[in-house]
Structures are given as C-alpha cells and as structure tokens.
Amino acid sequence: MRQHRAPRPSAVVLLLAALALLAASCTSDDTATSENSDSNRTGGANSVAVAALPGSDTSLSWADCLDPDDEPDPGDVVCTTIEAPIDYDDPDGETLRLAVEVVPATEPDPIGSLFVNFGGPGGETVPETEAWASTLPEAITSRFNVVGMDPRGVGQSGRVVCGPVPDGVDLTPTDDEFEAFLVQSTVFSSACLRDTGALLGAVGTDNVARDIDHVREALGEEQITYYGYSYGTLLGARYADLFPDRVRAMVLDGAADPTAPLVDRFVEMAIGREKAFDRFLAECAADAACAFHSSGDPAGAFAALRAEFLSGTAEGEQFAEVLTAAPNAIFYRGQPAYDGLAHCLAALAEPGFVDKPQNEVLEVVAGACALPLAGDGPEDPEDADDPDDPGFERPIVNPLAAEGSFHAINCADYPTPTREQLEAAEARVAAEAPRFGAGAVEAAATCLTWPTPPTGTNTAVTAEGLPLIVVVNTTHDGATPLVTAERMVAALPEGRLVVVDGAVHGSFPLELAGDGPPEACLDVAIIDYLVDLVAPPEGLECSVIARGPGEPRELPGRPNPLFTTDG
Image: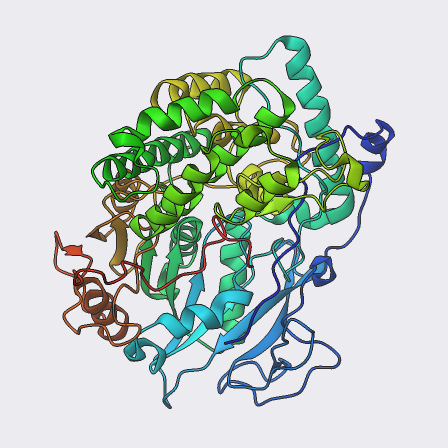
C-alpha cells in the first residue's frame, strides 16, 4: 500500500502580526487554484496517461496517482482534476480544480460510483481513498468504483491558506482580553482572505455538495452511492437535500445533527468526549493490569495530574495541552486505544516529569502519547526549554483546528455566534465537560471576525423523492454522541438507524475486511443495503464480534483526520 505525505500542520501559537497586515488582507482578489496544496497526488504535466473510466467525460485527463516523491505510481488506482466554478451562480467566472481519486471496481459492469468523505471539516479525502477501499469487503469493491474528492478549500482542491491560528480565548475574559483576542482573530482571518482569495467565501458545505454532483456528471453517472463519516454525514445530508433524484443509496456513519448551531455542535462533542473519558477511567479502575490503574483510582490520579499541570507556568500550560490532546485516540477509536492512553498517562504521572528537560518531555509526548507536535524545535539548542522561542514545540490538541479550512468551512456553514452565545456555551461545558469543553467552544470564536458572510443551511432535509437513508452510530461515540445520530434520523424524510454497541467513531467495516465471520451484523446490513438496496430492519442493534482471550480488540482502521495527521 502506498504511503501518503502528511500535511504540514500549522503552528498552534500565534505571535501578533503587524497591524499593517489588516489593511493588506482585505483587498486581495487572488484566484484559488490547486497549487495552494502542499501535497500532490493527482498528477500533472509529468503524469503518465492511463485509460479513462468507461462512461466518464472524454476530456478528463486520467493519470497514475503520484507517490510521496511525486513519481507516478502505476496501478489500478487513477487520479484526475476536474475544473469547477468557484461560484455556481457564475459558471463563467473564476474556477478551481477538484482533486479526484478513483479505485476502480474489481469486476466488470459495476453498479456505479461509491463516493466517500472521511470527515472534518478540513480533512483530506484523496490521499486516503485507496487505503479505505482496501478495508472494504470484496462484495463492495467488486461492484463499485470508489471515489474520493478533496473538498474545495482542502488538500489538493485549492487549500485555504491562512497562517497560524490565534491563541484560544477565555470566554469569560475582561473586555481588554476579549479585544486582544479579536485583534489576533482579525489578523488570522484577514490573512485567510488575502492568501486564499475569492475561494474563501465559497468553501461552504453546500458548494462542496455541488462539487460532488459536478464530479458525478463528469464521471458519467446518473446517480451516486455515498458513504460519509462524521462531518461527511453533514455533507451527505446537504447533497441529499440539493440533489434528491441523484441519490441511489446513502450511509451516514458517526452522524452529526444537521439542524444544530455551530456552538451547540461543539458543546455536544465536548460532552461526548467527557463521557468517553469517564468510560475509559471506569474500565481502567476495574482492571489491575491497566497501566494507569493508580491503586484503583485513575480518576483521582488524573485530577491530581491535571491540577499539577495547570500550575500557571508556561511549562504547565504545555503539559495541560498534552492532557487535553492525549485522549483524542479514544474519542475516535474507542476501546482499542485504551491501552495506549493508559501508558501515556502513566508516563506523564511519573514523579518529577514536569521538571524534565524539554527534549525528554517531547520524547514522551511524541512516543508514549503518540501526539503530533507544532513547531520545528528551537532555533538555538540552548533555548530548548524556552516556551517563548518561536520554534518551541507544543502538542496539537486538534490537528484540523490548526488548518485554515477547518475555520473557513465552519464559519461559512453557520450563522456567526455572538459573544453572549459563546459565554453561555462555556458555562454549560464548564458544568458538563470541565476537562475537554473549553477548547471546543473556543474554536467557534474565530467566526466573530470572519471576513466573508455565512452561506450555510442548517435545516432538516426536506427534499422529496429521496430513498431511505441509513444512519449508523455507536452507543458511546466520543465525537458524535448517539443523540446526534438520532437527530440526524429525525431530520431525514426517511432514515433508518443502526446502533452498534461500542465507542469507535465511524463503524463500518467492522469484521469483513479480511477473514472476518460472515455473520458480522453491521457489515452484512451495509452490504445488503449498498449492493441490493435492501434496508436494514428497524431497530437493528449490532455488537462487535467477541474474540477469544488474548486476541486484540483492534478494528480495521479508517482514516480520521480529526485524530491523525496523515492526510
């Protein structure tokens, strides 16, 4: 399997830029193109020509996809870029090129194209499409061309370019502190407009849905089959509402609420994370072999560790970020990530850890805790422990939140929150999600100074003529709690919920990717629906297949840009 280049994460800490940037930022009319991307998988002038997919637009230039060294990687998987208007109301205006990767069906005369989106917003799709297809049951890959498209503003489809994101803001600050945040946020958002151009105001999910339909037409398909994870469920819902007659079948896995305001979404996610972490602590307390067992009181040990790390010093702030970021794995992978988190917390709790040199701290952060870091290390080795050095490395709490596209899409999709709404949300997460809530709500504060108006539609799907849509969610999903999937079903004209007992975020495929048992409940239900359009029975509940003692609980991996930095 090919290895894909990871995107370069933006720095977490913003140093205030010169105010002169503000004036320069708001006057740009740069055209967004795929050259904004720092990775290239879809070929170009030097790519090797391959046969186009049958039925697709004959003007498309299909090519071998490129490997991380930008060399053609011969194989069955093919890549192309498709020109699309930035503004669909002005089809003769500025354009961008959409990056597309197709894994052809392994048998002739496939049913059609299975489009996939792995979530975000701001997560790339193209680099992971082949990897995801390799985990699918043969019953799927033999009958569908699997299609991945980087959403506009993301990856190779005209990446939004901004610069470092602003520092988080305490949502109950003094007026002076709040005004200082607004200055930072304005610098950031103005840089996004200056460096991205006209595309910045057109990256909303409605336009991404129109792009999918544009690609569908270019591929010569009358209808699409769609599989979306996480944010991809919101994208699927918008496509269904805009193009109901072009939906053959659709699965929304790890579903968000399409009617919720942005701040409410962040609050629900924070509470879901809090509950997921409590489940981890409870299981660790009950298992003496857990590396963070702490004499049966891991919750108390974590509270003590958090109090120590929130010491008020610069180093304490860095350690606190580690504690916020470390549980990310369990929020998306559930129980298979418990052991790794326990070893991470045990390493952080070692006596004297806070007094260790930075290089030893970072060895634990990047090693035992497996966290991505922002920064390239200090310019002067003697400054290795100086947090004011511009190269000081810090853990990335949310890799996507370090990308401009995350903010651009959110601010385009939702009405701009008010300070009062943010403070009310902060009060709720302080009560219901004290360990993981503040940063989630802060991410919405950037929209207060966003330079382009919101364009999204946050309503139930009301289009007529849609087929039944299947929604899948685990019982203890830490990113999209089950309640948000239930709201997704309620927002659809006809939805069918399949509940999986577990905590992983994004359930399918569970068992049939390799030599799994054919009785696997979820996989059979999804295969029957996608291939034969047989809907799962109402009230279907599935469990992860039990394994024998000592067998790993790891599930087949799915790309998840909210957790990984491999894009």
